[in-house]
Image 1 (spheres, one colour):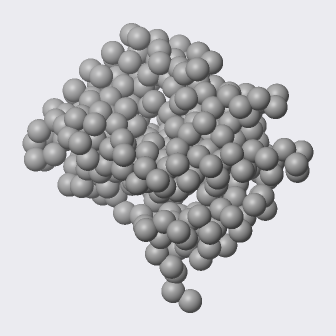
Image 2: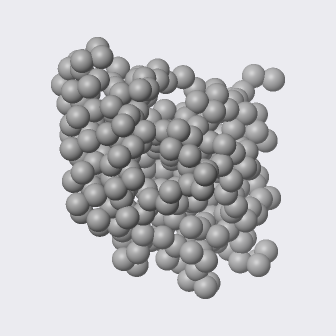
Length: 155
Length: 155
C-alpha cells in the first residue's frame, strides 16, 4: 500500500501543478477504487470563479458524475494539502473510506484556520474516515510554498 | 430587516420545496446583496449525482458564476436548514457576511452530526459570520420532517 500511496500522490502532485499553472492554489486530488483512478480534481477557484471548487470537491464531483452515483464507498482520496472543513465534510458526504494527505496546516505553521484539523472536525461531527499521513510531505509542502498566495507564518 | 428576513426565507422555502419535488433533501438557499437576489440554490445530490450540491453550495456557485467573481462580500445567505460543515465552510470561503438559517440540527434532535453546530465550527476555524436565527423555524422544521429521508430521533 505504501508503494501505491507514493505513486498516486505523485499523480496528485501533477494535478496540483496544473492547478497552479492555471492561476489557482496548487491543490489537486485523485480518487482511487480497486486500484483504478475514478476521479481527478484541481482547485479552480480563480479560473472558474467557484469558491467551492477545491481539488477534493472537484475530484468528488468528477468521479460521481462519471460513475452516475451520489457517493463513492470503498474509495481512497489523495490530496496534496490537508482538506479544509468544506472538503473534509464533502469527503464524509461522499462516503470516501480512506483519506491520504500530504502537507498539513499545523505542520506548515498555518494559523488562518485557527485550531482546525481534519481529526478535530471528524470527531466533532461523529464521523470516521481512515487517515493516512506522511506521504511525500516535503514535495507537497514545497509546492504549497511556491504559490504566490502563500504567506509564510511568523516564527 | 426582520420583514426582509421573513420575505427571503419564504423564497428559500419555495426553493426547498422544489428540491423535494425533484427527489432531493428539502433544502434551498437564496443569496441577497443590497436587497437584490444574486443567487438561488437547491439540494441536487440525488438528481445531479453530486454529493457536494447542497442548497447553500449550489446558491454560492450560481451567484459567483452569474457575477463572474470568486467571492460574495457583503452578501446575506438564507437557508432552510442549519448548514452542514461543508456548507458552513463554503460560506466562509465565499466571504458571505450574514447567514440566516431556519431549522437547526440540535433543536430538531438530530444527533447524526455529533456535537456539530455552525457556531462551534466557526470558533474552531477562527472565522466570523453574522448569524441570524429564529426565522420561520416552524415551517422549515415541518418541511424537513415531510422528507422521506427524515428519521425521527429517539426520545
